[in-house]
Amino acid sequence: MLFLRTGSRWRRLVVALLALVTATVVYATVSLTVFVLRQSADPFQQNVATWARDHRLGFVVNRLERWVHADPPSAQPASSLALEGVAGTALPPSTSAVIDTVGPSSSPAPATSTPVSAAPTTSVPAGPVSLAPALQPSLDGEGVWRVLASIGASPVVWGTSIRPLVEYGSVVATAAVFDPSRLHAALFNGSEIPGKGPWKNGSRITKGALPALVAAFNGGFRLEHIRGGYVTEGRTVRRLRNGEATLAIDRDGRLALGVWGKDLVDDGSWASVRQNLPPVVMDGAVSVKKFPGTYWGDDFHRVTFTYRSAICTRRDGLLMYVAIGDVDIMLLGRSLVVMGCITAMQLDINGNWPQFDTYGGFGQDKRVPALLDRRMSNASRYLRRSTKDFIALFDPATLRDGVLG
Image (tube, rainbow, N blue to C red):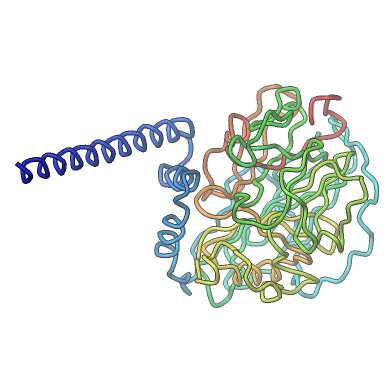
């Protein structure tokens, strides 16, 4: 009788455990399915990784990413560039120069913002100096800037693509350059990162701001992966830290990049501040080794070669967004220095999180997005719904009052 009672208890325990496992699997399957369907425009693998991180399985994702992205890039030179085809205008070849020999700009960047008219203008701003290709023979258009976005006849965003590393010819970088003094910037808050809404600047471009929209690009890491802060719309999501690379937007919409506590200080002038990690480049040199123990997206110093994005200041006063792959943090820093960065901040990495869009149909309510780089996808992300934060750039003269937070 005792044996029968003991066997009965074991059977009940096994049944209970099987029921628990079944319920867990069903819950996880339903939860994952709902999440993937809500972000159906993003790659399935990327959605699974995001869902796993949301459910405390980030350690599993980190190990898988380390395994998948363990191989260094090939030395075989890439046979094509990554700049998406656009109806742009190539700058004259005579403007080409070796970036390392370019000195400080003879004319300083404007100190104050000047409204840009949407009407055609008679003066067209000079484009940035072309980047000299590191590899020879160079590919058609390599390092030559093309106009990606204009307001009237006035270009405001330029793009190019280049192979910046001689010993890793397969690495391709795509860059977009813009003048922060001529554009109004705003930080938009993703539905997942930072979440915690409601926000006036939510997970997509505000409808009333669409006619003035010029460009948009991704923010930084998930907040649990960084030590830095996040402040916007009068709310502190995470406290700001000195020494972190920082994107800051003042109350007039002027975007600035620098090191918090050094280049940028808390003087009450900032409407939004987004930190990510310490600077990858400082004073024109790679600074990664100055910040030991930093999680750069390499599983704490285990090398991970993946698609990465960054933003940096240049000698000419322009800001430059860069998407590059596949590189680890040191190769990212080296590439940014070759491309002329003075201070650089790594932004998001992996999959199609790196994203820079420009928009056709200026002045209209319906905008047509165009990706900077053919490795990017989901061009409508910032028009429909973004799970992560992003920065959008607008024409200040066209932007309606009160439509942004």
